Length: 212
Figure 1 (cartoon, rainbow, N blue to C red):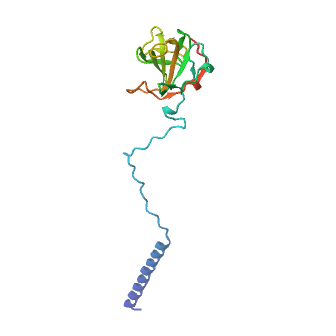
Figure 2: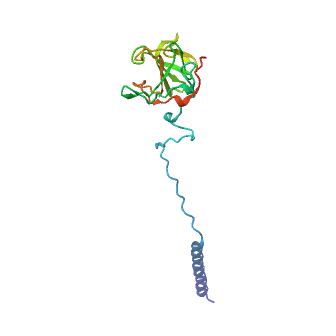
Figure 3: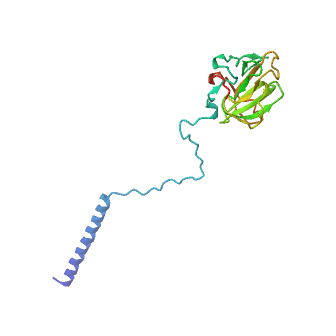
């Protein structure tokens, strides 16, 4: 075989090898599974404010809470003797309070542990005391007192059963009908702090009024 023939044969073998390698590469590319491109996670907006979520089903608003258990605010009076005057009419308006009749000078008691919020000496309620409970959700109004207990003033802390004052007829109460005008309200501390939503207290009286 001549040198030219040898070179021609070698070139054909090289050409066939190149073609074969190309086919192998093509087949490998066709059967090799493609890996999907990595998608970056969405960016977090650090300025977004999420709504508050209650930590438990027990979380409720102040307006949905019930008043505490109370004693009757007049010494010696049991819950079943408290008259239903909450929705009675008084001069064209609904009373929204209860009147507990008792002899003049009968001790008027703190219905629960309270702090005196205001002491008044004039107006329709006459000698009167506003007090708030320990949670500051509930305000109690005691009116028509004959006199205050000595030392009672704004900020005075009283335990349940402590004397606040004494039954009387001051203010616009009939002079011959001594009684305690008592009101239970949802506390508010704005410019109308004396005008909270009234709640009938009778369902929350659990014990006779007893002086501590």
